[in-house]
Image 1 (cartoon, rainbow, N blue to C red):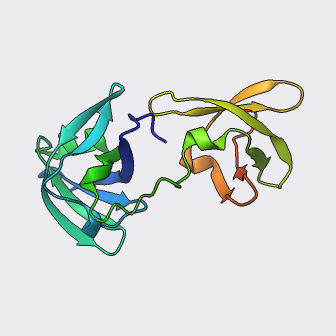
Image 2 (tube, rainbow, N blue to C red):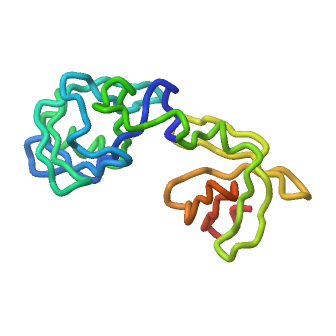
Length: 174
């Protein structure tokens, strides 16, 4: 949900730089480090465009983190520039292709209910805006249609069976 082209899947997020030689610590999402095809490039979005990087080395740190060295990221300054950014990969670059077509995508959320953290209904999702790095949902509250950023930090719960998303939104956002 990073505003990336639809053929790219978010696989990890750069958590922080690691050392002074350009290594980065990443947290993997639905896949593990072992699922990556190291011969395929990964992508990081810059100015709304996917920029390819090849993995020079990957050291697993547990089941969901890893130390990566990417081509073109040579020092601490380069590593700091990508800190907090998502790492994307083409579906074909994921060994075993664990991501299936049933996975929730922003397009499939239309008609879902948005709840606040107390479980009260905010409204129904009527549309979305794929803004690069900041996808937003259009939510009909019954009185008006508001635009709500769909950010991982705001998501408390996703109820696929019930078709609802519980969000913890900052005060005054709606």
